[in-house]
Image 1 (tube, rainbow, N blue to C red):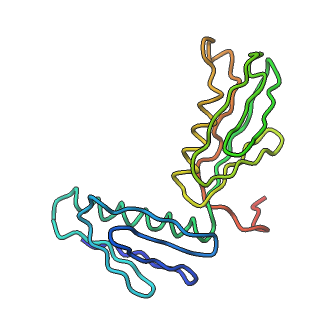
Image 2 (image 1 turned 120 degrees about the vertical axis):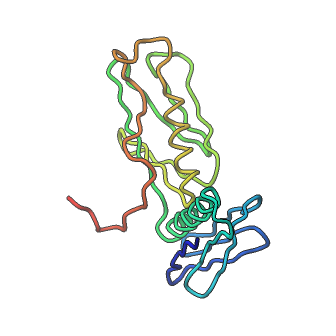
Image 3 (image 1 turned 90 degrees about the vertical axis):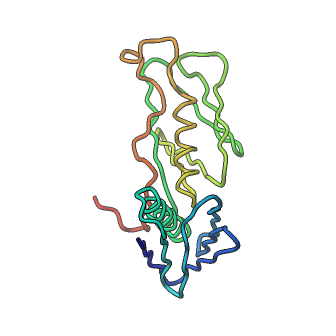
Length: 183
């Protein structure tokens, strides 16, 4: 079973040992293929992931690695973006970012600030009541959004009544080029 992935112009894909390296206009991403039985054939504008086995799991691995490569190509060409909305009805929350941390102040009137540490090469931007998470690696963007959402989770109250928090409104999606608004 073979899974081909087209490599667009301006993107280079290399195999360094068992590490897949994708570089493009937005940077470089690396992913380790260690422990996988998938074979990779690279040509100028196509990468082919194949499995010699006819087992269902082996075929699935080839498809998984093809999907990883497509996500990496999107990351180095467009980038990924997730959005979270801040909702509060009881106490106004305040947000600040400093480096790899986001600080949530006055959440449900708590005196102590809640903080979340963001790992990876991800940027957080606060636009009024929306937190925008951007980066090149789809998994890092999704994990950062989940970390922020978890930091502002209601504990000890009925969540049907206290719906305050930071809630995911858009999962990691490719960043739309400027001027392509649909609205």
